[in-house]
Amino acid sequence: MNIIARKFISSVVCSLLFFLLFNNNGNFLILFYFYLVLPLSLIYGGSISYFAEKLTNNNPLYTFCLCWLGALATPLFLLILSGKIKVLFIIGIYGGYSIYLTSLIFSFVYWLVDRLLFLYRPDK
Image (cartoon, rainbow, N blue to C red; front, side, top):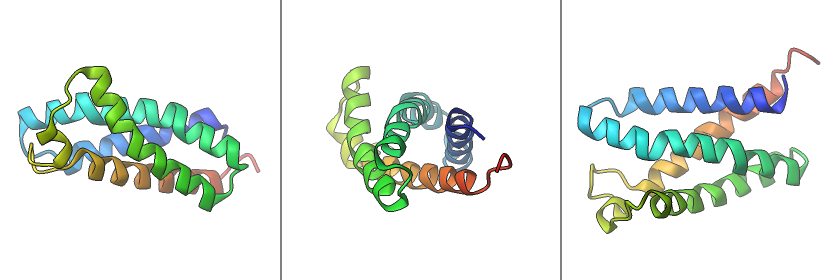
């Protein structure tokens, strides 16, 4: 399985997981999904995870560290881009979830799914 297919599958799995986990309030879910999870999966999966894997030559520990650093930087970047920067959204009062905690959980799940797909390669 090539790297683009792995990143796409990991993004879809993580997006569906967050959609199922936070399916408690319709308005919050739509805001949360379209302003955070969907762009996070596209930007994080499309760039940070890809370059972390290329720079570290698939070393799991270094890839994990770079993915967590990217997960800490991505939410602030997304909030600045979308113009929705609010202190309440960053510290977690809005909706009860901190954007950074969500991003770290997302990056860990993304990294785990991506590593499992990397280990299971039917083309080997």
